[in-house]
Length: 226
Image 1 (cartoon, one colour):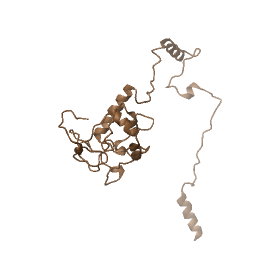
Image 2: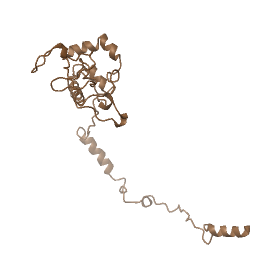
Image 3: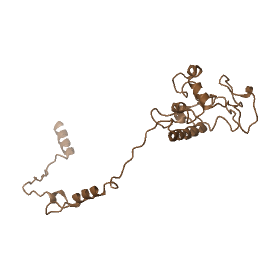
Image 4: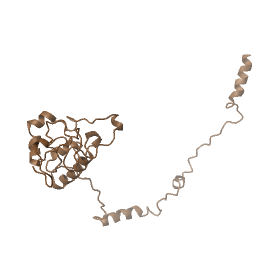
């Protein structure tokens, strides 16, 4: 497939999957139909099996712990379609991989199971360019119906549909109970529920005792010991 606006290139300049060092080479361009056929072929199964493609044949080179790892690179392929690194991200390194809303099977490798939320690129190793492409294609797939997703629950204001019912409830809450008004918040419980028959005894503290003066008892004890 020819690239529009670029100088024609030869097959020797293309970075096929069997090549290890691809820096400076062009990534071959394939269609979505070819990508779907590739993911259903035996060559794909021999490499990736049934595991996510980002944890099968790719590992990010780090000189520190995973907790302190730096952000992923900005892009693996420049504007001319050439690799600027040899160890590209999981999507850029394979000649058949690119995100497209018509093939949700590839996008589901980088989404949390059962959701439409992308996995962190620090875990998958996607470059920033492919991360943005994934977010854009997921949104496009949701609009075209190729990717299932959960609809957020909507909280309705039933006052708009049942204004009379809501008004009756407010009237019942504000009406008087008999001839007495409902107690307000600034009224204490003792004023509302008055019961003079219940009298709680007042606690009388012991006075004229030396129980808390332990040092005096200690001196008396030491004198007896002598």
